[in-house]
Amino acid sequence: MKNQQLSEFNKNERPVFHLTPERGWMNDPNGFSRYGGKYHLFYQYYPDATIWGPTRWGHAVSEDFIRWERLPDALVPDREYDVGGCFSGTALTYEDGRHMLMYTGCRPDTEEPRDGGVQIQCVAFGDGVNYEKHDGNPVITGDMLPEGGDPYEFRDPKLWQEADGTFRAVMANHNKTHGAQILLYRSRDGLKWEFESVLADGEGKPGWMWECPDFFELDGRHVLLAGTMGEVESICRIGTFDSEGGSFREDWWQSTEQGFDFYAGQTVSAEDGRRILIGWMQNPQTAEHRGIDLPINGQMSIPRELKIRDGMLLQKPVRELEDYRTDETVYKDVRLGENAGREQRLDGVRGRTVDMELHIRPEEGKMYEKFHMRFAADAEHYTEFTYEPGKSEVTLDRSHAGPGKTELVRRQAKVRDRDGRIDLRVIIDRLSAEIFINDGEQVMSAVIYTDRHAEDITFYVKGAAVMDIAKYRIKENK
Ligand code: FRU
Image (cartoon, rainbow, N blue to C red):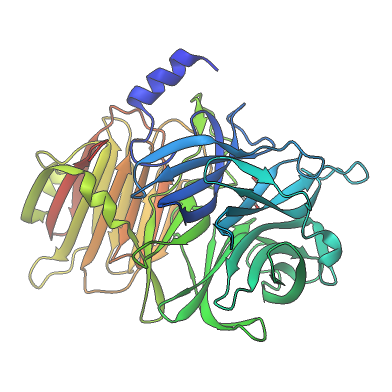
């Protein structure tokens, strides 16, 4: 890789407040945990190319979820049982104070050389910087799968410890008859495991495999998150966990993402009790096929604070982002209309490292037809968000975003009918945009590769609406 290309990229194009790999490929977040007074985030990392290769665990730490410091790679695929890749997993603080990682090893297998090989669960321990693989690896193998479980699609342990000290882990598996399933295992010491139950299963829908499960308590309920292979959907199921019987009864389904790019979400419990979710800001189906030449491929989402309100998951950007705001521009009661067919601009409202709050409402007594917002715009390019109150529908469209080819260019979602009112929080960081709708009821994320000089943000309303806006630039340091 050319170093000059990397330094140009770092100066002008690298996302400022989203975690990116130093070079090469990044996918899922791993081992998101609090250890030694810091938040640790590991990630699926392949430094030698900008496409997927046998992954290692990259490592970064942060005190506020925004500024990350990269540390040496924590796990590399160097054992007979993981040379096909150190796949996704999680972390916790072990009883003796060490940082414990649980991950999937891919063991290449010549009889049936599918992808990385057979998938087995492994453990490593460390001090927050250096990690050593456990001598007894692997700790869970294919012969501990329930009937019909496919040992080649068996991965991504999410590890936790119950109040009574029992270790538990859920992991993803494909079952020959039911399709996707999430399996629950238990252990007294985190090293000797036994199969407990099938926690959830997809009966084939949606997707044939749910990857990277997370399972946790939130506001008195239990939440199961997973990524879906073969569909653009991030699963969120809310329900009741019967801890004794190891069963999960779901009563609410939604998607954690309505846009294009959010996958393999993983949560941590913050020091103040908030549950924070971070995801790989990509779509696994399109990530490798972008057709442009940049020294990195992959970034993490903005971490999201989770809550349950009226039985539904709400997501908001972590409040720590607000400490990086500068150059405030505020407008109240801006009338947006058809403006002789021209997009409307507001002085000071532009840029590619932006945090912006918008409140849109109809003009007294008259419903508008459609609200349009374009960003990362210049004379030829833009990404567009629209809202049609009559249909309660939002759309994110990156078909005019320029370079970076992807077939996935339009996503639509239903939002709550609020008589033409809609609240948006828009976060733009050079190569991406994340739009939080109505207090986080929906989120739409998009990776874009539009030239960095495309900084315009414009508005247009079919009919007429009124908007309040507060816009900030996000700076690199507090
Ligand atoms: C999800 C995933 C995981 C796996 C990892 C390998 O993106 O396929 O299931 O552990 O990536 O990099």
